[in-house]
Image 1 (cartoon, helix red, strand yellow):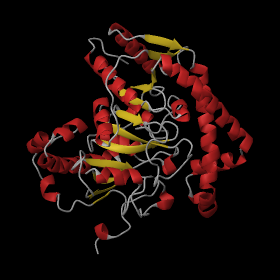
Image 2: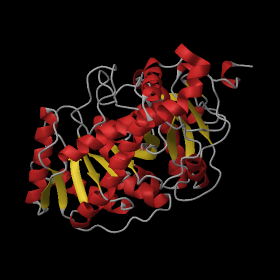
Image 3: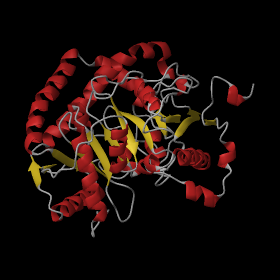
Image 4: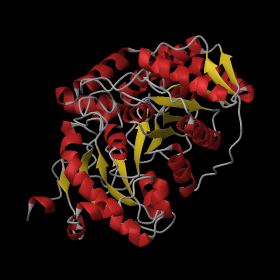
Length: 441
């Protein structure tokens, strides 16, 4: 039996049976078949989709040895038909997939094969989607970086914990991918990689089959190239998309502390939107957002420690050192500490619902700045964590920049107003992309 046939599959294994001939296409043919944006896939014929999958696989074969977005590539047949028929997608390594690697991004679980598909994977495959493989992530979706690099500049991190999913979409390897977020693990990588990341309202998508970190915070999310693609994906998986409307936009006052490049870009965004006729209202929420971020971290430590406690007893020092530190610190926390954090967050929810009643969409930077240099850190999630705490839908969209690394704009709305966030993101992205003066670093 060859190494490609063994049930325990090594990293970077590619099972391309039945597609090898298509991969040998010429560069000119590849260019003619290339379909990257999800909206392009959705408008393509089934035959064109079949041909485009071979191009995706070829791009992975050529590019992934330097990007390292994938743990394993093994195309899985769909189980049904629908709007996603023949469209490939990637899945974060903490999401269970039958017969594919599900090693939680951890060397301690290297070689582990999933026993069944998670609910979200079952749903996408039932709609005709082709599970292309598993994307790399930080160990146990916490902080220790995987080897994944940022496709926009290989010397920089792609962010985390959904590192591989963001990188795979940014590199044109798949039109969409699944990630998860407990603090900022979808929105921050999207910002760093120059793509769109969407975290729906807490509880809206099923978490069955997704390895928990903190169950009161964990949320599934998606990556696509643009907000238009994300809205199309939301429609394709059966959720209402609403219609575009002009909303008053809220902005924290005083401004949250971010790096100079992001500060300048964010102010330019506001200037462009005002010139386009947008109403922008300052909101005195900066201090509350900072406290919500702190509460998010403490709850993650408290819940994460208790979920992984038994794993720590079994594996000890073989586990990722950062996770060991989380477990030790979290177990030292009292129930009283966690309860206080929960009570504060619960008290904030009606306050923010009232704010959203008069200011339906709030804008903030999607990250403190561009992707940090090197792979030692996946970046700071403090811009995203408050909205994860509140469970509101949030999306990170690319800010058009004239130079430098990508930057992202974050939009959020009240819990359950997912279509509002998506349609507003599409509208604002169109304004920013068409502006004569683009946001610049």
